[in-house]
Image 1 (spheres, rainbow, N blue to C red):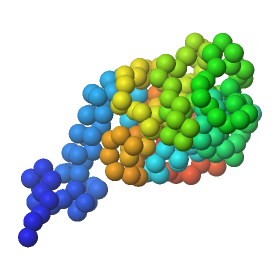
Image 2 (tube, one colour):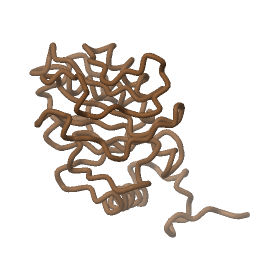
Image 3 (cartoon, one colour):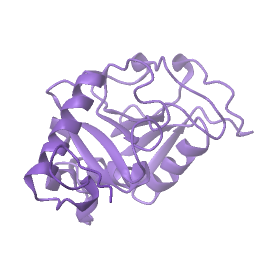
Image 4 (spheres, rainbow, N blue to C red):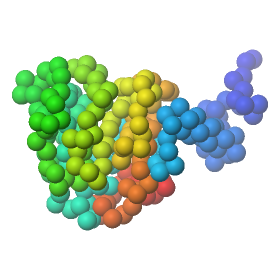
Length: 215
């Protein structure tokens, strides 16, 4: 009889209760390791959400397009299949401005940020850093093309951890765990603390999308 003994607890992690000390130690170790690897500053919280990255496609507009931002648009840089998925979800909750659309849907490259036609009064700017369908990767995102003060949100599911990213420049940096880090089901959501508030939240807010609940 062989047993998977996690951290000398006498049981595997799959057997642990989620409120137990051994499991809390694993959670704290996971966050600490992620913070060290990605050099996450204290200005940002790290959340481990269920639902992969797809649930955050909804959570971002739900937390940023309501309240004081009601009626504002969200800017979505179009770069392939997954940016389209994120845009489609955001459209359920508010107005979207599509940036750098390729009418052929090929997305071999992204035009210069100087040419981007975006809503300068938008609530936030969203982009996908690598699309596994079309294959386009954005490693040198042009932050200068985004108006000062507008939060930049990035789905980095396909390439988080594969090259240095300055986390401090992001409002929300999120990634499904199963591409580069871990098993399926978890989404690493690195959120700037000042965005975890009810100021711009929508009133109809599912609990699992409410960043404030998990602060």
